Length: 430
Ligand code: ADP
Image (cartoon, rainbow, N blue to C red; front, side, top):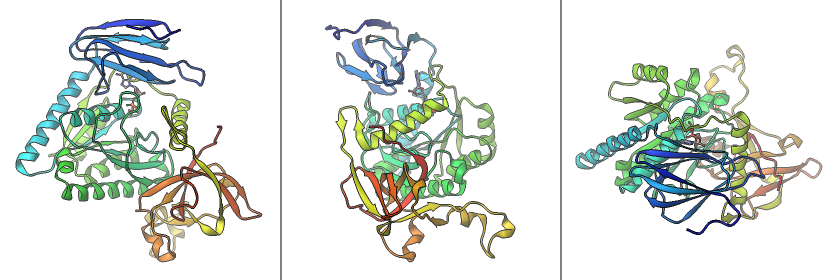
């Protein structure tokens, strides 16, 4: 094999059913690490590696190369850590996939719908990774499952502050994850469901409804079922949101990662026909700090505008007149029940559209462009339940001339004029 010039290479020989775990240093200056499969077969989170192809992993990556049969691989560069572990829950995860596949076969036979699976657990237990694994295994046997992303803090599909659904048609790319084409995305507006739990539950219901409609008209989607990734908030309203999700999607299976109490609570509170399964987390899952999470969110927004790896996007910057757009925030600040107007409940205020007057404090905020038809007051009703068609960032506000400057993935004009403000800010350092 030809060494990568200037990089140290380290060879690892893996026995069957073991995995090589490595982490790439984080930070701008960190050196990438390349991975190459030399002999045998191996996979990264459910996607098979091609032999003698070099896969590149950037700063902050945390990767596991698992082999069912045994293999040898080379790492080029200096990973922060790299070690082989024999102790992995992969066999349990594979068995879970096998059980789901049985359910799909049965669904096919009996003209029923395939399994709807919710993956739950606290933060950093590998929920997203398990979702990716199960989805990739399912497409590898010819299924067309749907990924439902409810993690508003760390979305694998769109920018943070959104919930979404994506039909999976091929296994995740080893380096880049699932190809994100035409996802269905809704605006939530912040990185934790707690800021507006009513809205969060409402959007979960919206996604469930759209998914069910799709299943009615599309047999493959129906048999493929869905894998729902959730937030790591599993107490109080966060727990209630999980129960709500289970009911909205009529889930058949709940996979609880590494949390016995949550497992017992869900067994107690969900209908008896829902299979609740407790699975261990992988020892390889690395805890991420608050900063690390924030960086990942920032990176996700940067990718949206500037592209990722081989693909470079060139975003546009242009001016938008205040008079040409309507900006709303979803949810009015809560007020004591006794102060609410007659006949109005706290729920109504959380789903209410509050007009935002553009001012300097709008700067750096991410805004969702709603797909709702432009129109006057009457059209306002559907905005919360309308998917978004894209995002812009406000880079400057001039109250004198009543104009704001925005960063946009597409040239002017804006496709729609209803904008929803997020709590999330993005400072463009490029
Ligand atoms: P969660 O969704 O529960 O927050 P993730 O699935 O995002 O957790 O996993 C957290 C991090 O751990 C990710 O960077 C992922 O790549 C990494 N990871 C997951 N499983 C392994 C493993 N077996 N070995 C090494 N790293 C892993």
